[in-house]
Image (cartoon, rainbow, N blue to C red; front, side, top):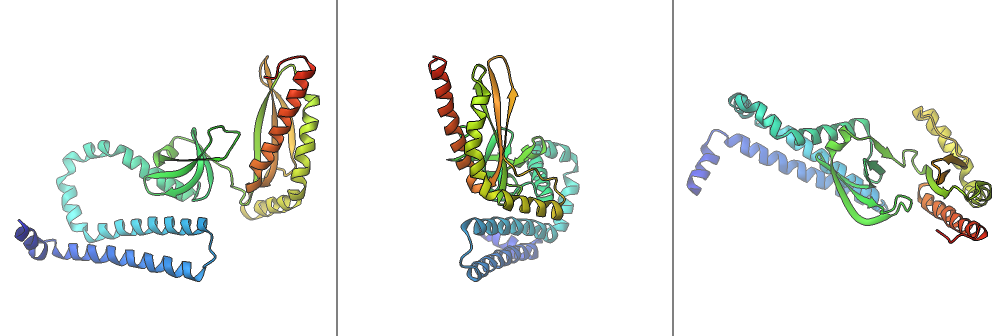
Length: 287
């Protein structure tokens, strides 16, 4: 059996294609390794997140080039095979529908630059920070379990790129180093909002004040360069009716990405203290 395989490789009709395929793949892997090592040595202080991004991008580019090169090398054999498989082409398409959708979602993500490694995104009910992207799926560190906490849970979640074809993608850090963050606080209907909102503003406004001018300049630059319609940088707290039991206090502010959760938690802590005091004044047990 081994003699037959060796005879096929060295004397068969596809001898040249096998050798060319092997050399091409080997050359791509070597070039990728040399490129990464050279780049990392030239920039020894490169952040881990940036290194990870270079690693993922170079791997995906290498994979695409390898697939394209293999198609070119085996073109005649593929053409012959395609003609012989014409009768079952429809069945193959149906069997690989999900694979085709994943590849289509990957093309959509790359062509529209929806997100990249390091971005905070939400697709459907899945929310997290992207750590890896390939042609079929996306891997991210999960955020949760409570949406208001917004911290990494330590778990990973992977979703097929086909979800990008049927679900909206929310990206938090589209403004670069800054973010406009919004969250809701449900409040019992019998608690006076005039006693709550000023207390929250006393906490939020001083926290945001040192960053407002920097954020306004950054937003103006983005609006000029990328023609974005950018939001206002000033913090704002509004009240929205919900039903006959609760109303919502909507807190919106701009801050550096790494400060948003800290500011949010300080506002929530103050709300809990105010709510406790108001319930106590009404003679009601704290909820």
